[in-house]
Image (cartoon, rainbow, N blue to C red; front, side, top):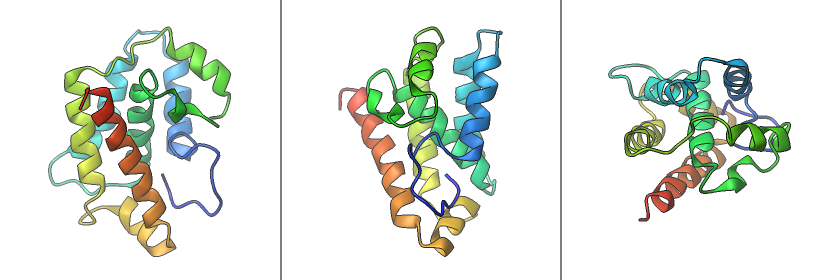
Length: 148
């Protein structure tokens, strides 16, 4: 999530990158929603890459969508929340073991400040503690979803 100046209604889905990802997914007709979510998450874990804020925001949104079945509260306050919840029932957002592992790796990478423009932006704006709370909530959700 890019450094917000005000509190967003949904910490996972209200950034510009998250909104863009959702718009892209909701018009997709190729049935490969799960693959696109995996791509968004995998972008954060590429070796030797600098993490742009938009990539991190997209991955946060993708992980939240994967967690929505086991933790519906991650969608609370999202734009067009009711329609989003209905749409999710008809697309592949299963939190498979492979997706869970990718998501865990992505969240761990987001917490590392090195080569991380998202982290630096939050640090310089004073919003890093709140941004890390979002990461920790997703990490806890993954742990809970895996029965841990």
